[in-house]
Image (cartoon, rainbow, N blue to C red; front, side, top):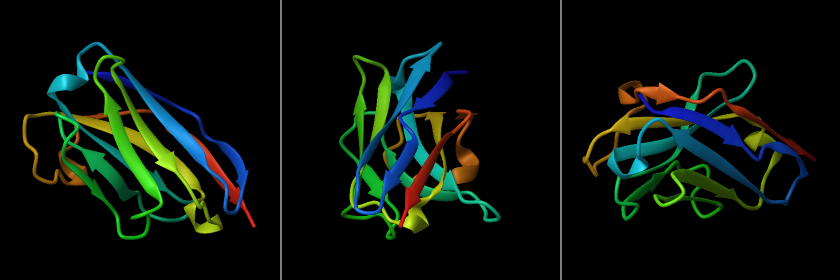
Length: 125
């Protein structure tokens, strides 16, 4: 299985931006559907955005649509989450996940096979 390490989290003021990175090792992301999820304190983990193996098909949650962008650099074996116009409700631990598949349709959270340790994003008001 691929190993995933997230980075880029931190503290930012409302309206600010952050870019999260998810570096993979042990396998190529060219054969993986990738996703970003988040879990706020006391809440269930929720879907944020995902991208297919080719990088051409993306999905995003309604709550982040137009503010967050997922992208993939297969040459660097890294997935990114560009987050703009951050709000306090975006505060959470953000996780990267992977599923080995050439599917381009939406992959639900329960189908992902590998998960990173998470990176904390805190947005102050």
